[in-house]
Amino acid sequence: MLSAERKLKIARIINKNGRIKTSELSTMFNVSEMTVLRDLASLEKEGVLKRVYGGALAFNDGSREISSNIRSKIHAREKDYIALKAAAVVREAESVFIDGSTTSLALARKLSLKSNITVVSNGLEALDELKDNEAIRVFCTGGELNLLTNGFFGLAAENFLKEINVDKCFISAAGISPQAGITEQNQQNIILKRIIMERAGRTFLLIDSSKFGKITLNKVCQWRDINTIITDKKPQRDFLYLFDEKDIEVVY
Image (tube, rainbow, N blue to C red):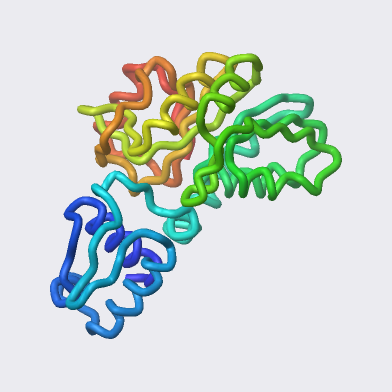
């Protein structure tokens, strides 16, 4: 298991349980306690946890999001593939919204090579990728910057999105399942996603295959709100039946 993937799993365990012992993590991941201690030190710098004797504690009640710096390193190849497919559907003179997810950051890197498009985003890192291309009009939603996720949220961002229209919007999610639908951990993320989906001509869900079958805290939207799902490999049969039933295009 890659170090980045192990740290993400540790962060999720800490967020869920509130605490964990170093010895338990060593056994769980079949690595030395010294390796675990290095991971915990790194996660402490990220603001995910606080190291204590024999283990670590979550900083809060477990609802805290994991930093974009950690998430961007997980399934990076899959996200790049999804971004390539997503960028291919953006045409000249179109306006698009991309959210502040790490998958959308990968998309921003692809879009930065285009010209004569307009991009709106609440993602600081995505905006940074696009800012040097003078052939692209770039709009930031504004709002309060979440330093952990590098995304802008709040009333200002919501009001901005309520006043615009885009041809296409690209959103992400933390999980997708036939039972719970499309789910996300952060309520602020969901509010912005719902607003922009109402203002977009077509909505694309960018989600890597590791998210299939996962369920997180909050439902994002109805199946009818999604036009196209772009992922990195062919979904399992039950998902394909569901998408066909809901008239959702699948690209992989």
